[in-house]
Image (cartoon, rainbow, N blue to C red; front, side):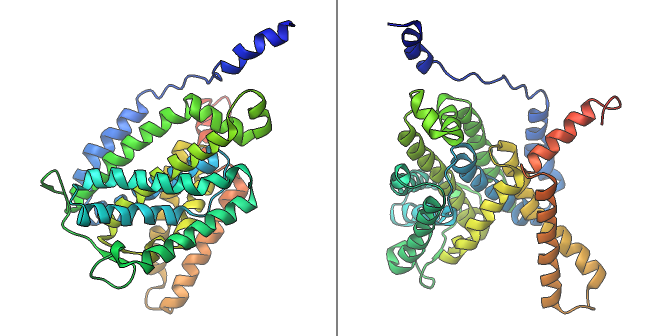
Length: 352
């Protein structure tokens, strides 16, 4: 037996080395700002109508990024898996009598099971065909939740009217309560995702993403890695869908999780940066906050002088042009752009 053959099993079992990342004081300061400072300075509108959807979209982007950015599996069914989480949470709360936190957890597991099911064909189909398969999942869930009344209540077909929001006997229906619950869930799941992508599971995903044939040669179970990625991604999307329905909208319908929602989440990870945890928050901020800024500027400049429909089209055109401009400037996303800018600033004035 040759030396190469002797060393092959050990090399196959050795974990892929990753450089140690030091966060310094930046992350604790950011958490302090989010948990302490923001609730003091922000009003109910900013907490409930701006920051809560921003956090939930960041979580949804994180779920899709784990599948597409890290595991390399394309998907257009994000809105459908969010709908699974939302309607399953409703079922557990209303029909099962579970408290909201447990209902959200179980709904995430149900969504993970659905993702696992639709991820089974990923061994035989990939690329464009896998994207079409995920799109079929999107339309299937829309049909399912509109067809069977068990999934909704007093509203119209496919609409759920939610009960009073409470967690372990405490009312969380206020803007501040919904913000704290959303922030806590997003922070916890983000911490789990950071550790997950740096574990052997995340390294296997990235190896499959870069070249699945080479990953199989070194002993990685490619099919298992793909299916696990679908399940984990769907769990995150299911939790995001539950939070979107219960903590943001207050009443959700199938249209709340339509194909436009799937494209919105896809744009978040493209703009923010695929294969980047921070990129999900940057992309969600771009998608959520930039339209508000454009609307404020347009209202200040053209209010009363331009037709409302035309003004809305101008806002969409400006938003699209900005997206195209950013992608041309930095195709790897805003996270890469900010990282490059930070490196240049760290070397200033010697290099910029």
